[in-house]
View 1 (cartoon, helix red, strand yellow):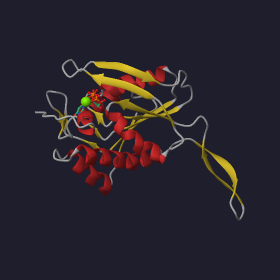
View 2 (cartoon, helix red, strand yellow; view 1 turned 30 degrees about the horizontal axis):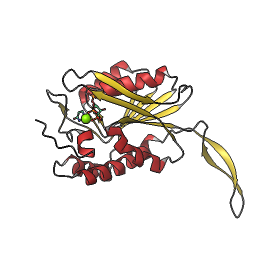
View 3 (cartoon, protein in one colour; view 1 turned 60 degrees about the vertical axis):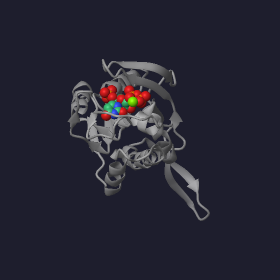
View 4 (spheres, protein in one colour; view 1 turned 90 degrees about the vertical axis):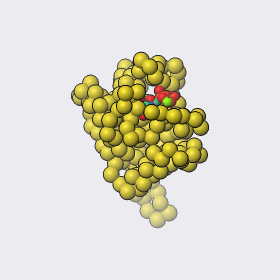
Length: 214
Ligand SMILES: O=P(O)(O)OC[C@H]1O[C@H](OP(=O)(O)OP(=O)(O)O)[C@H](O)[C@@H]1O
Ligand SMILES: O=c1cc[nH]c(=O)[nH]1
Ligand SMILES: [Mg+2]
């Protein structure tokens, strides 16, 4: 497993506004979309391509096209849905599948409540979208699910990770073809398994649910 933290002033600035608890939902959604586009630029650096011959108005030339089958993008509901638009802006021909997962806030067990993915992912390059990697439980379940379906390679785009969750994932997926692309590795997890300093509950902030986390 590889971890890439995107170090860029635009990412750092947008993330700072996102973290601010006074940032309202419409701005939070907009910034999430913009951040994903910036992270996706880095995350797609190794997207599979092949040479293609085209005619410009002036000459014949060899360009670059995505290899078929096209990449599969999988947002993890709910919060990952807020990242989908930012990703498909950059890769509009990608296929999109969905995984609905939630962690029980008390036991931290992961519940998979929805799945709409191609049955056979053999040989597919998959991009998973989820803003928060906290304990890492959700991402671990999602990645294992995709590999069981035959996925060849999984790239996760997240906004924030806690070092504890990232370390656990690295330990369990050391030899797997997994890349995690992030805007920041934060300081730690608190006793409720929230990322500190973090940005709060990403799903609630995206979809306008009032929250008070302490
Ligand atoms: O690393 P973990 O400890 O598993 O936590 C991370 C998960 O928690 C959040 O989702 P949540 O369960 O709150 O669901 P939601 O997106 O519907 O709010 C987040 O979007 C991740 O999916
Ligand atoms: O800090 C956290 C941890 C898990 N899920 C979130 O939305 N935020
Ligand atoms: Mg949530």
